[in-house]
Image (cartoon, rainbow, N blue to C red):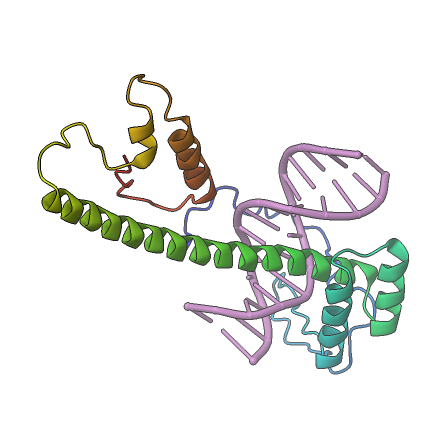
Length: 176
DNA sequence: CTGCTAATCCCAA
DNA sequence: TTGGGATTAGCAG
């Protein structure tokens, strides 16, 4: 997917400490075929579960909580810390994605509503011909007939919309 | 310095 | 391919 790699990992890798702290049982592999390969730890169900529980209570840990949790789970503090960092990051990502979906739906319904209103306007126009030369479709605009006053309201609403939804809105709707 | 986020790496399933 | 543990850079306090 993402192939553009700025900043390829500088291979000046010192002796990394792969397995800090006591890793949970059954992790003594030796398939270390020569190279500098990152050991992949898998947390046990219990560890994940407990981490998850404490994350629900608190998305960040005090140093003491971190220490206690690490001790209890037989993980290093660093691992607990990293777990929480990743958890926060991915939680935020998920939230953003959901918000994006919501915004898309909202935009869709707004477009649909707009479409219906346009049709309604057309119908009303057809019903009541002439004598309405100066009639515009928007009541708000209708209110200010004399001055070229502000559509500040409309501008603001537009601003709100565009700032909140940063997705590709191709057809910026023709409101008023 | 410490702790966090964002970006990315990269292994195991 | 994906999920998720780990690393790195850079910023804030």
